[in-house]
Image (tube, rainbow, N blue to C red):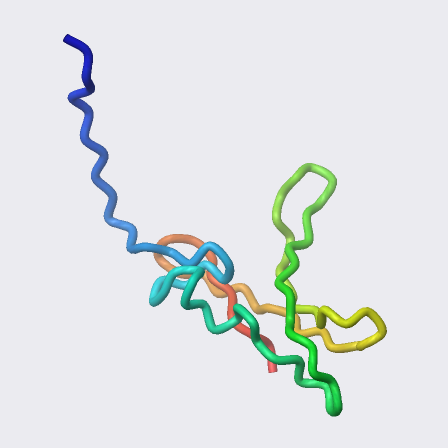
Length: 90
């Protein structure tokens, strides 16, 4: 009575919910609580996702939590076997 006999098999590895890389999950993401790179700033970087008018993800970037700080780091999308992941542009 009841129950489900469907098994879902996936070949994808666990993917970070923040940067979409496959070697860690969000709680261990190096972007989490990353320090701002601006000289004299003690803020942390927050991850933002730019969305277009149709709701599609366009890009990701890190911005300092301290409002007047100009600290921004844009993320570079890299195409991999399971879609895109993001790394910091230098």
